[in-house]
Length: 108
Image 1 (cartoon, one colour):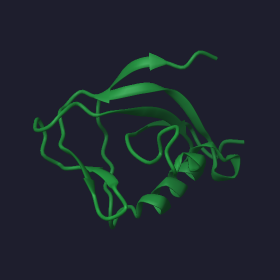
Image 2 (spheres, rainbow, N blue to C red):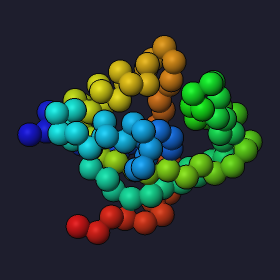
Image 3 (cartoon, rainbow, N blue to C red):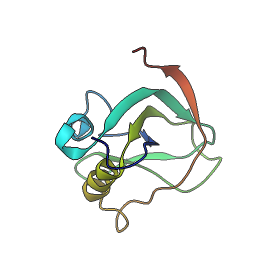
């Protein structure tokens, strides 16, 4: 059962399918994480792979770098809490509302 209305989240790094943290999005005990489709930012950002763990992050330098491709998920508040915990929000990562272009949508 969902703990709230679903909202869309764009992921571009270790949370994507095939990446090490993707299981967080697919584990029902973490809440709802439903794949919508692949997406791409409508604004260019620099994508940096940093630290000895090769962690991807975007720099807040709009219109510099490239359009960033990732995946779009519908998530509930429980999942948002788990994502925030993983990402160290708000101390290490920020999140903001962005326009994301849907490249393709998952067939049900």
